[in-house]
Length: 355
Image 1 (cartoon, one colour):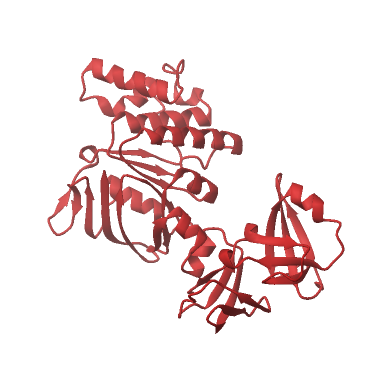
Image 2 (image 1 turned 120 degrees about the vertical axis):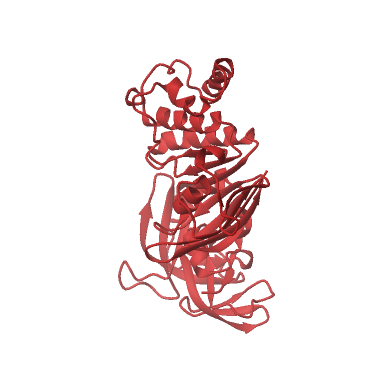
């Protein structure tokens, strides 16, 4: 299964230019609001038309501006799940799921319906209407309707954003299980980094209509090439930096000279490290280890974020240089220690980036 996309479409603020070639994987699309993520999906589905370019699905041309080919939605074999579910309010669950199957025989329609009801745990809801369903049930019906047409590409546009945390996690697990047996290509737009990492194998990152990263998820999270990619994938700690030697840099805002793993990229201008990769240690004599003081903390149910000032005590609560994240079990063991504490920047966790 292969999806090739190379499209250009003028938008209000900037042009959308997206290129990728995806083979049989789940691709996560990340980017800020208005970056062009949803528009990319709409162009693939046929809901919007690019100004130029081509979209090819398993050797079939869905769109080609030069050849003047633009297949209608019904001929593209595309399944779509929207953020707002887009179920037909006047149709039952069963009729919503089989809506795109009217060309099939009644027997085959019933077989497809039975299969999706079983896979997405909708038994007993067949005769209900959308307004009689919970948000999670509506989302499962929308996914069942998309999969019932046996699409070659499945487009998921922030499908869980309207759901509460518990339900979102349940449906995420169900989606992973569903996609494990799905033979087509999947594109998954989300703002949730943990969700993207859990569901997707590869990531495409869009900023202001341009693709700024396309790689497997591990590479993008471990070695983001640019400041913007690091930001969009949740990195909190950055400093302008310059090379001192073949294996040492100066992180200017942090006031640190840091050992790094060579080679040092010739054009790098920033150093970065993710908050959960900063280690708090009791040994001040380790490599890349510096004294720090706590400016303030932020608490979530399971983690603490520590806002830390390096080298000197902070003068106020917003006087900090780095953020460290740790589980509360670790926090309990360190919170009463006298200052200074010591933080270690592991060379393997540091990344050097272009702007």
